[in-house]
Every structure is written in C-alpha cells, then in structure tokens.
Image (cartoon, rainbow, N blue to C red; front, side):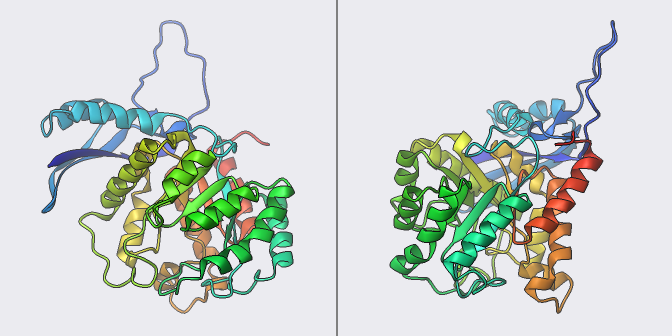
Amino acid sequence: MTTRITLRPLALEAAPPPRVTPPGDTPSGDALRLAGGPLRFAACEAVARELAPEGIRELARARLAPKDASDWAARYTSDGAEQVRRQIAALSAPRAPFAGLSLTRPRLMGILNVTPDSFSDGGDRFDAGRAVADGFAMIEAGAGILDVGGESTRPRAEPVEEVEEIRRILPVVRALAGGGALVSIDTRRARVMAAALEAGARIVNDVTALTGDPHGLSLIAEAGASVVLMHMQGEPRTMQIDPIYADVPLDIYDYLSERVAACEAAGIPRDRIAIDPGIGFGKALAHNLRVLDHLAVLHGIGCPLVLGVSRKSFLAKIVPGVPPKARLPGSLAANLAGLARGVQILRVHDVPETAQAVTVWEAIQGYPEG
C-alpha cells in the first residue's frame, strides 16, 4: 500500500516582467513559475490518495500555498514532505530542450497521417509525395516537429500489418528528416520505431507509453531517441467502451509517473521523455473535460507536456453535428486552454491557424518577439 501526494497548481497567471529589487526590499517568493514558463502560481490543490491492490482511496484534499504543502502532506504519510519537495521542484523547474527543440515558448507538432482511414484526414496524405510536401509546408507555417503515422488509432480502428505500416511511413520519414525536419514516428511497434529511427526520425510517439511491444523500451534506450508517452485506457478497438476512473487526472498522473520511472530504469533519461494525457483515448466526454481543466497537475512529473485535441470527437459532443474538418474553432479553444495550463507542445492538424492563435496568446502573455 502506498500513499501518494499530488499538487495541482491553481490560479495560474502571467508572470510579471523581471524587475530590479530595490535595496532593502525582498521579493515575496510566494509565487512559483510553472515549468519555468510564463505562468506562475501561488496556490495549489493538494491531494493524498492511498493506492492499494484492492483500489484507490482518497484520504484528504486541500487548497494550500506551496510553502504549506509539506506540513500538510506529512500528516498522511511519512515521506509526504519529501514527495512535496520533489513535486515543487518538478513543477517549477524549466524544461530542457526536447529532442534538441527549445521549449522556452510553445511548440507545434504537425500531424502527418499517411493512412487511408484516420478519423479526420484519412486518405489526404496516403500518397508519400503529397505527405512530404505538406510536411515541409507545416514547417514553413510554424511546426517544430512533424509526427508521421502509418496506422490509425482512432476508436474501433483495426490494426495494420507491421510490414504495411513500415511501407507507408518509411519514404516520408526519410525525405522529411533528410530535408532537416525534426521527425516523430507515431507507432506502437518496435520494428516500425527502428525503421523510422534508422531513416532519420528522432522522436517516438507511442500511444501505449512503450507497453505495446516488449522491445520498445530497450530500443529507445539504445537508440538515444526521445519519446512521448501517452495514456490510454484499453486499446483502440475497445477503449471507448465504458471507461472508468477513480479520479481521472490523478489516475493519469499515477500511470504516467510509473511509465516515466520504467523508462528511466531501462536507461531512458527523463530529459528525453515527454508525456501526453491521451485526450479521447479511453475517456468519456466528462473525463476529457476534467483532464483538460486539471492539466497543470501533470507538470509535477517533471516532463514536457504534449496535448493532442485537434479535431477530436469530444468537440462534436460539445457542439453537435460538426464534422472533423470543421472543428478548427473548437480545437483552437481547447489548445489555448492547454497553453493557459502550461502545455509546451500542441499536436495539431491545422498548423498555420494554430500558429497564429499561439502567436497572439504569446503576445498577451508578454513573450518577447522573435
């Protein structure tokens, strides 16, 4: 049985510009920067949960100043103060570059599905030449990463043969990486990962968080690649059949914490790991909305946070009758909500439009130009 303490930053606001402290004056020190970014927080929601084989039990929940969280946590577990110390450090530390990409401002991951059956763009880029041209156009429009996928993982999707998945992605990855793009391969199979990395990809984006193939962990460790670990309850064919959680943001936190620990134990350092809560993967609408509202808790794991909401079906449950390619306004709203909770990387279909929205958001937050 384990008692886990989690801290969710509350009342996030833009940090003021740096100032020179007058002689004899001292900063209050009450507010902490979230992941070293433009947002800060002076309060958090602290939760103590007891994790046992028979289930999860919430012990207590409170709104606190970060400086008071250690004493509160010590009431519920002997290592509570140490858990809080580690989380405060993780919540406030600047994120290192991911696969060489600086995270001092939000980044876009452009989606390049070379599939005939993806939920919103299936068939659009099944031709390799079209996919490559569109990929470079995304880079020109502001994408920092191109995420190439050869197998749909939409709800109820059927698996694709490994050989076919490799056939689809290989020429696209090779051409994009050869042209200087930072390429991610969206796959759950180690052989596909290996083929893409050999062709020049530098990131693996795995919806199974490296649990779907027994060779995935060792492959990533030996290749020196970066990885995005996503949360998914179940698997694509069944994941939307009555998903159940005790507390969905905290359950995702626990799962991703364990997967990061497994990666580190396998030789993948934390600075090569990003995490993704998996919006729409084994989650009902209420789950998705709660996860989006509570995204800031995941910064306590200490890894860059990737958010993928683009065109997803939960948007059409909020605004019924909107087909996938007409969901840009909803996608932008959800992405900006993610930025307001400190997300570093947005995974999107519509790069130019999202880049414009992010640029305006950055200006409001006080980012320097350029």
